[in-house]
Image 1 (tube, rainbow, N blue to C red):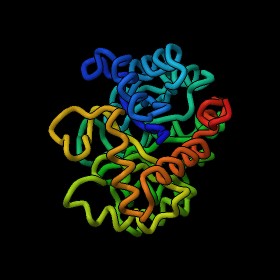
Image 2 (image 1 turned 90 degrees about the vertical axis):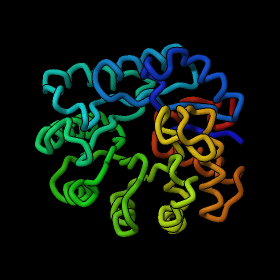
Image 3 (image 1 turned 120 degrees about the vertical axis):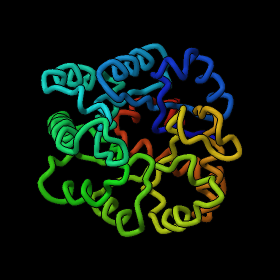
Image 4 (image 1 turned 30 degrees about the horizontal axis):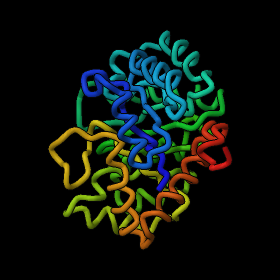
Length: 266
C-alpha cells in the first residue's frame, strides 16, 4: 500500500526529537508522504524546514485556534512568506475550538478570517480544526467567511448533517485514529455515507493514536491501521482504500501533484 498522512505534527520537537526516525518507520509501512501542520509561526517554520530536508514532507502553515491569543495581524506577513514556499500545500490549521479556552471565540474568528483571506489571495486550500463548534464554523463558512478554493476538515467529528454541510462546501473529511475505536460506530456510519473521493487519512501524530496502541504516542507509521479501519467502514479493501485516499490527497492539495513519485510516474 502507498499512503499519504495528510496531517501530522513531526514539527513538535518535544514529541518527535528524531523526526527522521519517524519518517523512516513511516516509509517502511508504506507512507510515501507526510503533511506536517503548523500551529503558530514557529511550528510553521519547523514544518517548512522539515519539508526542505525531506522529499516526501510537505507543510501546512498558520495559527491553530488554540494559539489565536498569541496571533497578531503583523504575524500574517511571516505566514504569507511560508505559504509561498513550493512545498507549502495549504494554510492551517485554523478554525474554532470551544472545548478549550486558550483563546476567545472572537480571537479565533479574527485569526481564522485573516488566514482564510490569505488562502483566497494565494489560491491555497485551508485545513480546518474544529472542536465542539461545528455549527458555528459551518454557518460562518456558508455565509460571509472568505472562500478558499478547497476546505479540508481535519479529524472530522461532527454529526451526519454537519458532514453533509461540509461536503456541500466542497470539503474533504479527515479520518484519524478514532475510526479504529470500539465505540466509534456512529463515526463509521457517517463515513459510510461520504463519497469515497472526499475522504482523507491522517494520524494527527502524536495525538489520537489508533487501536491497539491507544495510550501511546502516535506516529505516521501507524497510518495503515486507520486505512484498514476506514476501508472496513466504507466497504473497501485496505489496498483500494489506500489508493483512493492517496488520489484524494493529490486532488485536495494540488501542490502535491508536482511530486512525480506520488503519482507513481517517476
